[in-house]
Image (cartoon, rainbow, N blue to C red; front, side):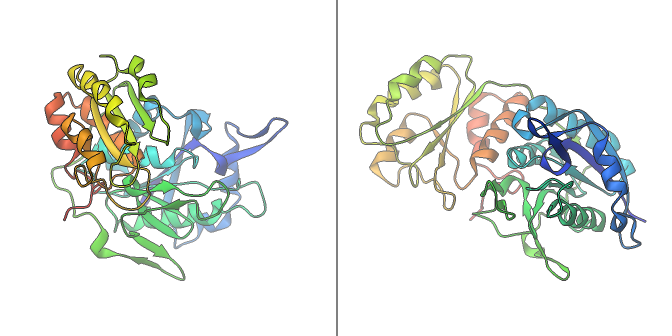
Length: 336
């Protein structure tokens, strides 16, 4: 009998109605699980339940919670065949990305899931998401951090939230699904990461000051100069298309150079969900490359942010981080 640990962090799936709207309530969700007979069916893996405290709406997730989840998985790693992390949808892709980097050498499934409708409601999508996530975690075919939602299993650091109210809440714009759940669960074997050797190595994250800037028409880059101090260690800039900035972006270059001199690593991602950054392809992106920015290629912003946290927490110097941001570590970047 395969054993799976359910780690409940909060989020919509376990919320109840309050006078101020839906909110998580300590102790409620375990009783809700016990009321679902299918979770004790012979086909299901044996599972145990762990509830983090305090329970959080995922918009309140921080590096501290990422460390708590990763440390718990590392602590219980030898006791279970897989792990299911129940999480709110708003920052689920960030947490999935962070765990993918923190859990180096992972050789078991870590499946994040949740719901758009609370389990206490009659039309909740949480029941099917949870049951399928448990089956995937118990089967052990996938040996990486992934995200299951709405019938699709996605690589965790490739997923991004697509819909605020649709039941298919996540997409993986630049990488195929790892599995699809219909009448049966069909795995895309070619898309899975190869088996990791050497055992699990946990890297907790430091609360590094990291920022995200989204370029828009008419942006006044000078407004951001004040935050470009030596305290800011990493920044992700979401540009147009393949890495382009407005024609008057020359105002940005002194700011980037100043950040570079302060040791800040600037990573360029695209606002387009699909496709990759290619610095230097167009004149409007060449200046970024010359100023010392690195390409995020086809990484999601969520993965780029988590990767910066991870690399700084590893203690690497600026040049090593710049180099590694453009290298594939956990399947977060497409390798041509």
